[in-house]
Image (cartoon, rainbow, N blue to C red; front, side, top):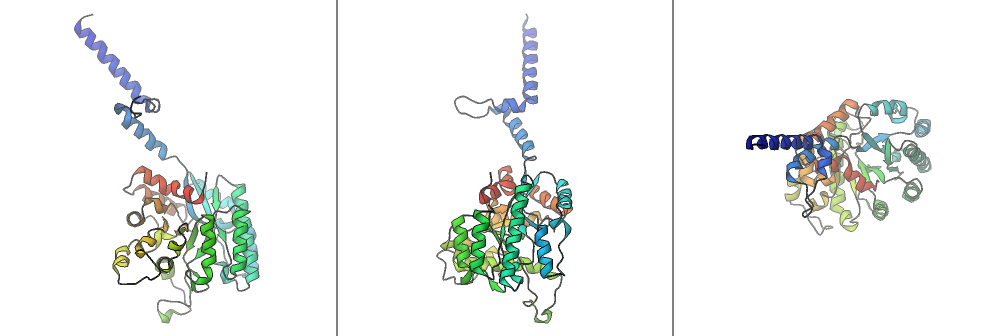
Length: 370
């Protein structure tokens, strides 16, 4: 064989080998340097491309969705006949039809508003809490591929009864935390009477979801007393979340109970945006041994901000991607809004590893999910 034939034979073999490598990325992903234990350089980009493709298919965990089990709805409406619950909150057929349009998303359940403390009779509020928690536990057990976990609902106008129900919800029903609201019957979350709840939750090492709540008798303008307007949901709720976070952080609760974890709705309210103002404000926090901003960075933020990528990047820069959780406010956020939230996360200028943390990793860790 002459030299030109040898060259043609070599090139043909080389191109065949490269073609095989190109079409067999998964197989060549396993080719390693025996000494270094690393992927051989020619195939690193192929393996990375395959991994990126796989990452689009994994299950996302929506860590802040709402529900109202049917038995709970019936019991609540007996006490408050005018209460209205949107159908996807209690009708699983309609809910699943909506979910099927969203791809591989599993949900973590929290009870929808109103807060149980709005029921004046403490015993009736406790009965409602037990009905809600039983209903959420049943849904998680019946539809494990749809619902990965649920947070307990408590009647915090009766702390002794609430703590007993918390123990039952966590130990017997296997719920994965508790939801509270930004104020309890008008009292801030750092009120001394709520300390036993925080101590108990730190012992469980499970999170507390914080949902915003506005009150008609605490308006920004006195002229609005007793009135409701469209600003409560859009501006009032993030403000309520921010104030609750500030009160909790300033109280020293997170220093006293290092295992305590809070998940905030709507990306931590305005705290990430106002971080520098908070950090350099001339306030004194006698209960803290560290700057308040360090306690505020410990809060977890969901992504339910209607598809606002810059908002999510602001939160990520403040608390880190390891403190962000995919959350949509479903079914209050319909299918189109959920897709906007997903798109906003996909458009974040972060690594794929960080995106995986937001979509599922952080929720798995916080809730001890398999």
